[in-house]
Image (cartoon, rainbow, N blue to C red; front, side, top):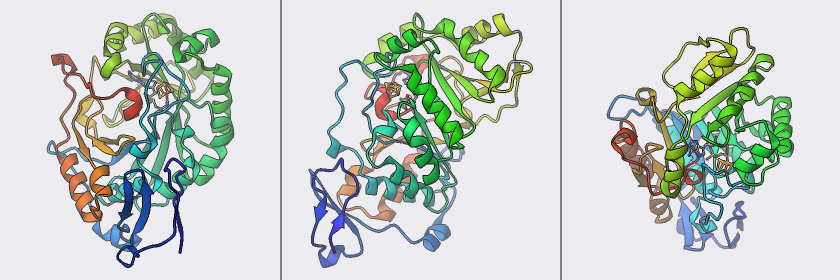
Length: 376
Ligand code: SAM
Ligand code: SF4
């Protein structure tokens, strides 16, 4: 039977013959050659083998963030240079490889997935991918971080396919400043995306705002004001340094304390909500507001003690800490023929060696990648 690989990012899509040795596997072709993925175990076997995974500090690893592509339809100043070179398509994980790796992760107790990018919504076939990921036994929550430009059309199909929630990036509500930060974005597209997400039931809507000195530090007031009437969570993120834009990032970072002071100077003291040390966002509320404010202070007040996150980069590396370059390559072994158990052992071993936290305070930066290749 011919096998059609669904990912149009791969170059050669039609495979006509399945050799006997590969009949139980899933074979597909990349520029690097023919690849056979061994079938993941069935649902019952997967359920029986599933066990919680902890790192060497005893933190449970249960949250996998997957970068679906490093490419984007914007070029935010704090994320990537304007003339960013993206990876060739054959270096990125195919749909089949992503599904395989999520099955492996699920067998290690991962139950929460976040799809990110670059911009995840520009990946061809993203709706079908969401459908397949959310059907994997053990996966109970599938979320997405997106710039929302395409959500006007995609929010409902994504929700129908099993997406639970979205985090939407919006750094200012001023159209001109939005264009300046994103280099060409139209903020109306974001509002339409937010609206479509709410209608599709992708709630609670969370809005991400990276605060960048000289670009939008005054805009935190307008963004915070949105929570008075809307039950949204507006999250202010300290800008983090990566790769070749780290000089820009370090010189433009605005601290959690400064952002909080700005908001409190207008709205008065914030009520502090209870904090579980698992979500990176520390929750507050303007007294009487319908929504909440969150502060993600990765740089000045890190929250590593509750971190159970690992990441899959678009080129299939298990990244153990957002802000460190420690990675375990899963894609090359997979393409080299490693089966479920081997990849599972690599993932488990990698998760065990998750670093305690980042080294920004001692001058250690992640240099190998920009944010768009990791996904946040
Ligand atoms: N394109 C999608 C978006 O913008 O939401 C998903 C990918 S983006 C890399 C994920 C999140 O990382 C966004 O909220 C973005 O604002 C944030 N981000 C990008 N560069 C950052 C940096 N240097 N420091 C902190 N957050 C950053
Ligand atoms: Fe694209 Fe998101 Fe990076 Fe902005 S933050 S350039 S939208 S990947």
